[in-house]
Length: 126
Image 1 (cartoon, rainbow, N blue to C red):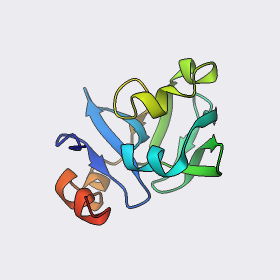
Image 2: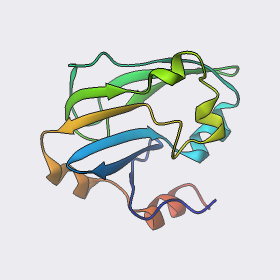
Image 3: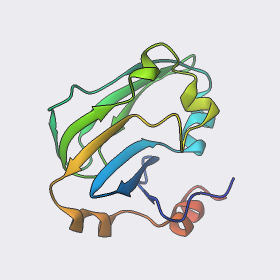
């Protein structure tokens, strides 16, 4: 899979896409493949303040329960409620419909510490 060039990535396999000053967050295609079938997503609460690389959500698969880390600091302003009844969206569409949360970032310079698509692909050996 080619990873979207406009996204930024963490070494822990989260992605972030900036949209009108807001940051949409999810896990990568590589991560969902490693996890297997996603059966439950614990979404963060709207209004939660998060720090970069702090755990803010959890994804449960048939193999494991995995923490999801915030790629950027900020405040959670929206969550993908559809994942409550359709967690498999993360497997089916990890970079589009399977997004987890949107945050209002508090420090956009944190983007500089994240990987580009090319760097992420090298990181996972793609």
